[in-house]
Length: 216
View: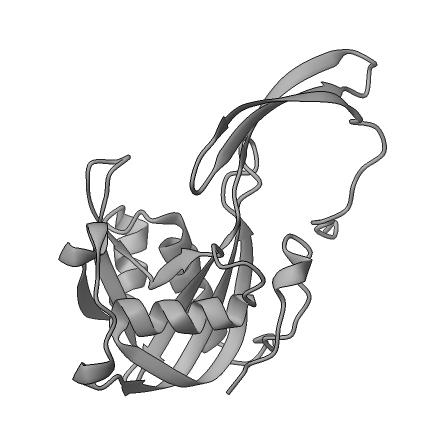
């Protein structure tokens, strides 16, 4: 099998120019003029995204902590992993993941590893997400908990067995892309006694400036 050359820039495909159409609080949209291998020029729309993190938190009994959140573009609630944008300047991805777990699930975890890295929809966006596997959870004291706002006001925390989530993914009941990938990856790693997980300092070519050590 061929190696995944994620992060490599192939020969050709030079960008002749770009036109920015929209700059939002989370994303930007541009159109690039790209030279194709046959010398023709094609226009490609790109959604620029800051990147994101998500957490598969495993509790005793292979129970996974999930959140249910309203997602406006699809118009209904989705069952998801605790997750969020890399929207704090200079914040390492591991710190963002720990912050999201704290804010969304009111939990801290002692043990962190990289589970997998994703390009969520590379045909139209540069969005990249790093998914961590976390264990050794402890609850956050009520007095320390994050005060939710916007869609997170109605967010709820749920716990599901990993095998149940795998079945939900395969049946179409679990559709959030990061959640499906994280659940299936966690099940695969579990089948190998959790061997093969990467340390949190592992390179992330899609967001090299966001790799950082666990602050403890």
